Image (tube, rainbow, N blue to C red):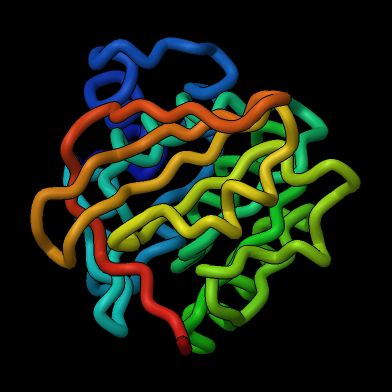
Length: 215
């Protein structure tokens, strides 16, 4: 008998995330809770829990589960944090952050993906996520809490880190972002804001779709 979605999701969590060293109980519980198959098109649902990115249409992808988990791990969100997510796509990362107790301001430049993400997140009861159709290069300063966002996660790659995103980080907060040329070698970078400036470090090589904008 074919595995159920719940069984496939549990196998994804154990083999793709926990066995690769990401063992925080809250993180694993979030990935167990979110039905990833509902965030991909019907034609991709049989592969929803596979160890690879999948097309969500319009030239965009939903990232490999491990990469979503790794970026969330390095963001280090806490319950009650206000997180800015850029490149929301179908809304899967937003749902993971909501499961972790965060309030999410999600930006996506493609209106059809915005509409789909809003519908899926609403249907699943994720009401602490607001998805906006706008260019992510400039962040959302008018939506940030006093002092800045508690974290910023970017799921598309600019050639260089936009200065506006650094500026919108609260002290102690992190920006997790892939950086590099379009469809070429890119680095997943973690930027942390301190009282006197920012520091950054590379985590690993990745490949993301480009961060596109109107400018």
